[in-house]
Image 1 (cartoon, one colour):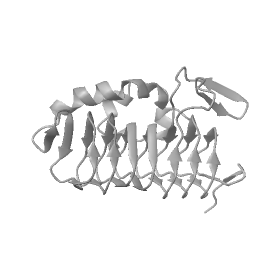
Image 2 (tube, rainbow, N blue to C red):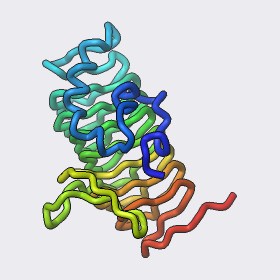
Image 3 (cartoon, helix red, strand yellow):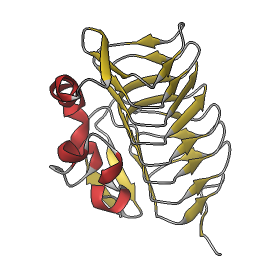
Image 4 (cartoon, rainbow, N blue to C red):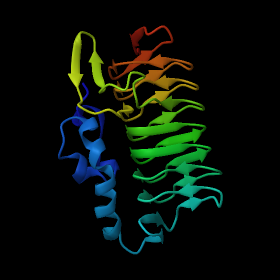
Length: 219
């Protein structure tokens, strides 16, 4: 339930070929920078290299106060709003919102992702039409600085990586002021209640509640 195939429709990202090499999404984190550096020069005339290694689609709207750190790619019809801080190694897809005071670092945002208000997203992959409510963040380093482990009930998957944020599947909704702890994986079409502290794997089509209770959705 936490492979790339389980979580994402790869037809909705420029990283399709890159991500197809891996089984698990966190395996792709180490090479995001190199992937962007290779992809940028191939994007064609619809993208403008505003600064060295910063490629922005001609239809994207980048507010004057936003900071775009290299390397990064900003897709068509995307808005990068007031005081957004893209530290680098960020691939942002089409029709996305990177809102005011949002910080991105070493991330892949699929098309139609929204991080609109006061979000920190680091070492993470956000799937198609996923949305992070105001103030929700990804925590990407454990307090003891040990390597991140993915917890799925009694099963534990070693990542071998110190920095792993959240892997949000397609159409995931994260409620306002929630924290996705290191190694959080949320399956497609699942929701997280506001102010939640999320750990481990949340299956697809579920609701994660504040107490850690997970319930299946019902039509």
